[in-house]
Length: 249
Image (cartoon, rainbow, N blue to C red; front, side):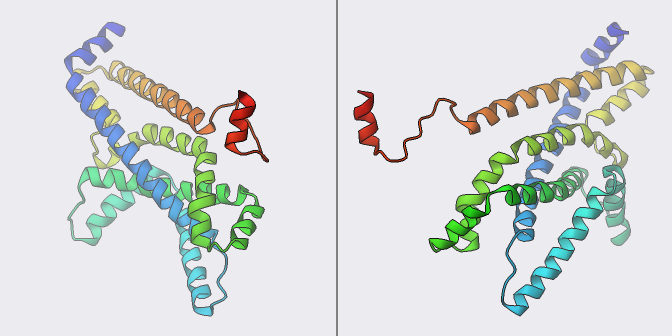
């Protein structure tokens, strides 16, 4: 069994490498775009209500659209979304289909954006309200408060959830085979059916997925530790830097 799996890996390594590269391209690109979508929509959903009636109405409309978007894509499987988006575009354009790579990235991005919207919204809400009040007290508007004070904290706080989204996208990119995207799972199936070694082929695919997720997990954990900073930092509230240096001497 393992000899057959090793034979497939060496004989069709180009297919496995191409599938792996496409899986990484789809998942990383889609997650990055999804994070941007989630940041934008999350900030919009937590924006204070405007006193201007026109802007207030626009806020309500935009929030309603975002709510529907989030609930739709969180409440349906990515496989179904892939079929609806890819073939829906073909139906709307009289048979013209999107590029498979573009479609795969777009599907993951839209799906990730829906989850990231709620993750970002939760991260913003978790920040102490006193920081918003303090920023307002020194004359900052909402945009300045979000970009300079809140969002840097939110990005650090939501990193574990964002990392989890990336790992899920690496694995869930396998559902894109339903539209013909040549990712790792798709290529593994082709090899298995060609050589009549279905189990051995998917065993190789399983091991590759495991290796990818383990590597990405370790990299992300190290990145989280970097953001956390040193544990032996010194808090000196009432001393200047020069005084601290003199004390250390």
